[in-house]
Length: 190
Image 1 (cartoon, rainbow, N blue to C red):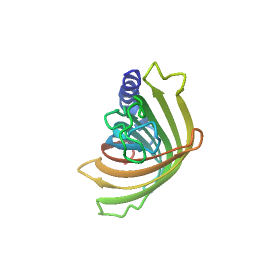
Image 2: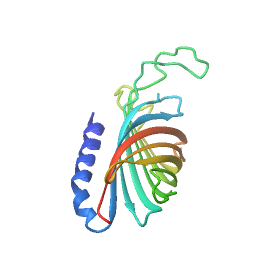
Image 3: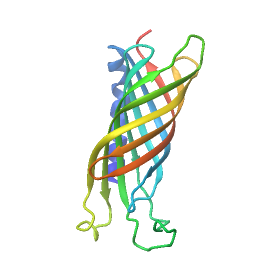
Image 4: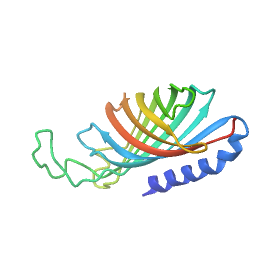
């Protein structure tokens, strides 16, 4: 719950800072919803909420940061052989962040804009089960990611987007696939 409150606070502060940052350059912000699956024996995939902030250098290149929060449940405790194994999965808060360079294939008078992005990932897993803290300490790790998706430009400077991102975390060794949709807006610039 602490992580969710922290995520909500970061989102509110970032959205509040958007008009100030827009004075400098083209700035975008989007709210994300989707599924984040971590390929780890102790974590279950779950629904996530997040925020994406972007700073556009021009119509094609953007520096974007994303932060996703999930609270994986333990309602399906099964091993790799699909046999129910009580206690295998543990309750945890998962924060997945990334900083990416994104390229948009923009063309005049085209609303669908495909994009490709790559960058660095950060994963923070905080286990909520106080009886297993010694056996499963919190995990923080860095890695790389690769993503692709499509943005649909709506009226004004609003847009909808869909994105798929593969994250590979080095230590602890963990991989995740996130599939998200979002709604955002642009500020500043032209």
